Image (tube, rainbow, N blue to C red; front, side):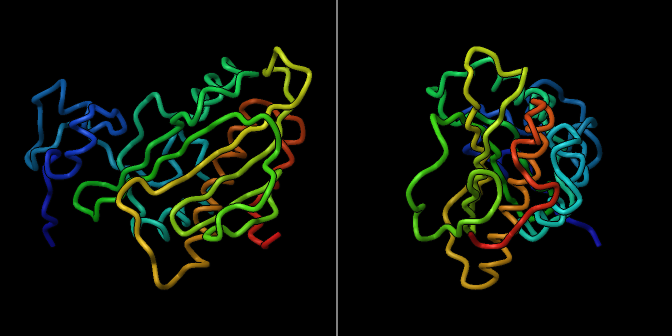
Length: 230
């Protein structure tokens, strides 16, 4: 069966307009006219979920969760700057400041020829562990300092003490977010499955960051996602 290939301009006009670099396809199209018979750059790559974000960020469980979220098991290869190692380096370089806001750690795009779906993974530094109740759309889970999971996003909060985090005697309070990047939707079914899937991806990336930073006891994160409500 022949799959109709959409052009870059139809696929992501908003991202292209603001020059967001999140995909090898966009970068390659901007610098090379060398294309294959389908009109794609010859260096365009499609990979499995476990190969995204540097190859150490998405576990087997998280790759399955990505399929629940996106409906696909194949994705555009991540840009070289979107790796766990790079995110950890940037985080360590700004600690102990908490004024940087949410920074991109990775962007995930479904492959061309499949339904268009984009996910944004971010990191940020907070002054302390989260307090108070999250918005009603979130379910609070027992991971790290707290995990908040909704049908289009999830956040894992954890504390990290590490020799890589200099400049403060206190722990770093790190938040990793995974969120759908597009027009909001309100799913009417599979609500629990979607919340669990987003939490699983956020846990996987959080654990990878904790290991990269050499956080004491992996920041208190479990080796497998814990999806029980707090």
